[in-house]
Length: 260
Image (tube, rainbow, N blue to C red; front, top):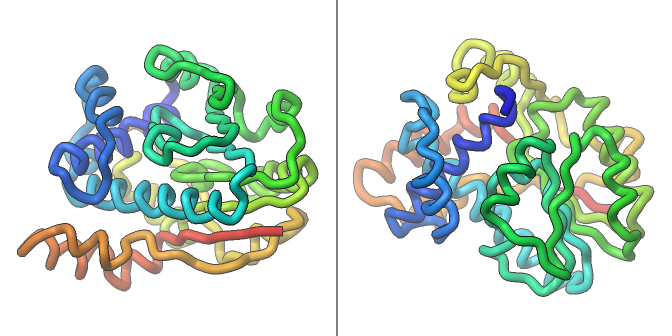
């Protein structure tokens, strides 16, 4: 895998750690995959604080998918840049689901997941939207971009989103983003540096992803909601709440919902 693809091991470790601790996110598949992978993460990317953040982010995405499927139970789900994530198992939905990532990631993924009539994996760079040729048009689609947008330039992300809105009747999108300041600081200090990634991109405001995409910004979500922080205890809860989920963090990292 190239350096960008290796970043998938950072959230995998985080989800495995919180699951093993019995907090935030229950993900036995992540525990199993991390035990098998034993990827040599370094200190920053193996921080327990980052693991808590990764676990909370995934839990928020999971809940959003569940809530959105209640509104659109027949929607097709697309998880773009899925890595080795087991959301399709955690959400346990009864709808058509596509996990999409680079060919080398999907090759690895197919060693651990099995396709069914409802579950499919597609090997593709998400900037090459010909992957949509393999997906039937539908009245509703739910699209997840978790830990992905920061590796795409704004125009690349806009072009991908525009093709998605052309393909589906209605689109519900959840995407986490760096701010431009966070992208700048990432060249100096970011856990992804541990796997050799330096170039990332930020989004100045949520309206950036409205440009030419046919999408409308709906709302900003909390990446570290109180009910998840409250699962931490004592000193860990105090430090995470005030440092890792404090005002500085909120200036660096955003979670936006869109629709059309």
